[in-house]
Length: 338
Image (cartoon, rainbow, N blue to C red; front, side, top):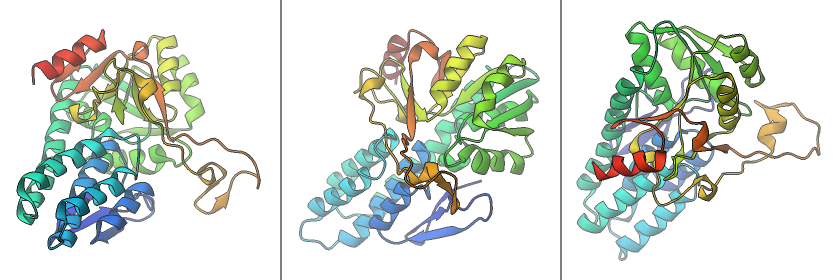
């Protein structure tokens, strides 16, 4: 399964707002429309956003190749894309890589396309490697709870949290996956369940509020989720509702893992309090798919992410191995060894 394609100098994105009802690919020929696609969650998931933004910078280079101020125009395009989603650090990581490329090679479209393709390929390779590391943590006949969508649709391919689940399932270890529906946009119901059903991995869809009772019934052996940005001390931002799951897992003595490529780690931030949390339109809370679910005029609060403190995290699964507490030390060693 894939969500991003680059074909004939154009960007194609699988419209995830239409899933699971229909698989519809949208074509993008300029970076402004690509930025809007990121903003409106046609493409979503931190790694996938980074990959899409890298290709969007190639679209910008195609537009500005003959501009008198190529560097200035590209910088403006980078700023437009950077403003699309503030929490996902892979966006900025990919844009910075593309900037280093265009500063070095100028309007060399082949070189810029090569760099974007490399970012895409590296993400798939990181996902595959971390999935193998994470699968070693999964016991036989495991019942796994996951939240939101951290699968092939949220990455360059394969997935982070779902990548771990896919690999463990291929090893015959997975008895059942429980997928939270993930309000308000139902990424767990629409996307995670969709991926798992397509892969013929056993999955049970639950409402978000059912997770605690499921744990109390002894039906969960571990929780594995994705990550949109991790600070230097191990605090991490992920889809709203992740923090609640971490608290519940701690109470019930259930291992709680996050799976992430090293490109999602932001060592410039000492802790999670510095991670910006995107606030989205309240209409996402009061309606869905054109159906009003809340009364007109009601106040809403709609942060897209929450912060899970490192004290609630059992381990972080990366392509370079599994990191354990104290996370400030294990994260520092991770980059020293790179």
